[in-house]
Length: 28
Image (cartoon, rainbow, N blue to C red; front, side):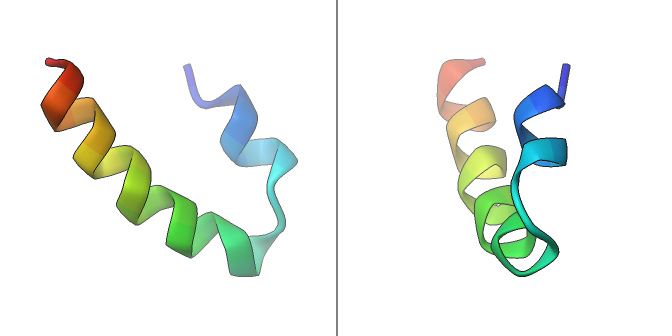
């Protein structure tokens, strides 16, 4: 489910998590 998140560093993870949340909402 969140394989990419594990690949991203912790610093980027936070920023990506925000983008992913928006993307997930848009996708759903």
